[in-house]
Length: 272
Image (cartoon, rainbow, N blue to C red; front, side, top):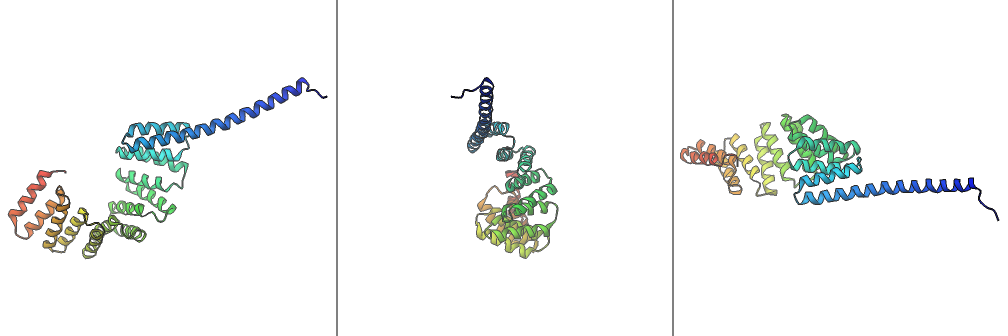
């Protein structure tokens, strides 16, 4: 019977230790990753209950355990957006797309944050990256259109709205925004048609009613402006712009006393 020499025993022990340490490392990495998932899940649960600061703490723990956890960075960005801290939100989304350049939602939301910060060109670049990844991203196309509008690129904005509507013909907000862009190019009748479509899809869309009234005003049809403003006010009695527009329409129709009451009401509502 063969016996192991001391050297052989040492080699065998060394091999076992190497195998054990390798397994331990794999297990530890897996444990960290699973733990990161748990922290991320806990963060989303807290976020759902409006506990935003606590949620951020959980996402931070997830990222500490797994710095390449794109979803945790993304979720952290969402919470900062809800808190109105858009610079921090944009930074989180940037980290997410560094890790996963194909993360369309992160590109899109980074665009939203940058647009809110007034960085319209940078926002548009983000929206374009998101749409390149996901060409059927109607919401992003609509958001890109609004950013283009801020740069007075109305025709390009209309193209974005048309693409969004082609993807989702029942996208009331895109119809409304297309109406605004058409109005900005002097195409008021076409704008009214877009507002009509938005209202058909969402009869309680106060902004579309108000915008339709503005378009009619530009066409010199103040009776229609008045009617549309009244519809907007029925839906949202605190709609300051609609009260002002109703007052303007009444004034142009020679009903000064009623107009003054509308302006007074708008003043009382202030910024509501």
